Image 1 (tube, rainbow, N blue to C red):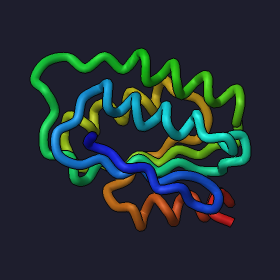
Image 2 (image 1 turned 180 degrees about the horizontal axis):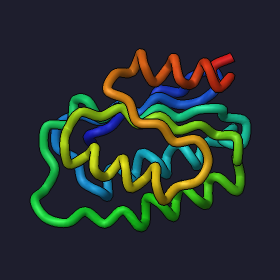
Image 3 (image 1 turned 30 degrees about the horizontal axis):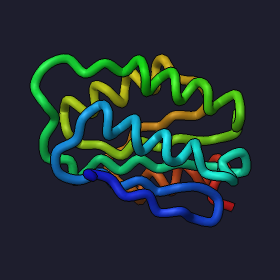
Image 4 (image 1 turned 120 degrees about the horizontal axis):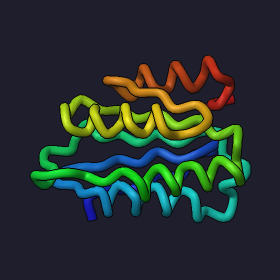
Length: 124
């Protein structure tokens, strides 16, 4: 598994490492959304900084976007921070932000993501 989810007081921190796929990205998202207290979460941080490889070719974001949109119905106040520096993942993050709902931000560091979440009141 190339991701680990750390449950935090008001949300989740997902750290991805090594090789990842759309299926693994969706798996982390699904794990967060399936948490029994998800409707009370204020944030989810998806840290993709340690991803070193994506498979070549097209990555379909439709299932990830659908999962995100469905979760917004259950928890419309959720703020999602995507932390990324890999060029292909950055392109996917932009698709997520443009087609998703709610607050979705893209950041180059976890610290910047946490500052944004704090400014939105999601960390309190």
